[in-house]
Length: 249
Image (cartoon, rainbow, N blue to C red; front, side, top):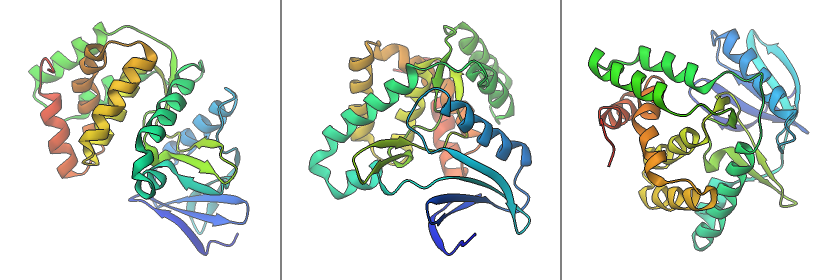
């Protein structure tokens, strides 16, 4: 493989292009379980019919785990929004429609969102009383089995040169309640400092899905707490302020 063209660099991985292949190389020592789970998630999502890059192989390169999939030539929706700010509303419409398409699918083999969130809440630095409140709140939320992306944001949407939208990065995919997935997306806009589009997104999601905004908001402390486990110190501090809100207003 020719790993001389870097597409993206993240804390735990580097993504390369090799001709018509995309090679995601994880840092040395990265969990084998997490790599294989991500590849398995993506393979399972392929079976739903969603437009995503196909997995080609899982391998090791210079002692590091790597996932090889189709390379999609195009730009991320995040880049397009930066380049064409006048089209932001149009792009947000497309973004929400894609998320609703994801939520229209089911995949019985995916891990359950509630199980993952309960596990993450246990791993937080929150006091026992707050953790109890979050576990109780989570248990009381309706149980659904919709496909949830878990990290649905404009940088994980690639618009190909022929105008097709592809959804990438399925490492956090679960089955569960779509409103939890929407709450996660809302918080991602906040973490990026884009509060205006966070509010636009939430209003659009609730309108298009016919979901009460208060219902999505009830998920926010739960989602924020579970997300805080993987965030950096600044993000963790911000998310835990949301997690400590007993009743989000």
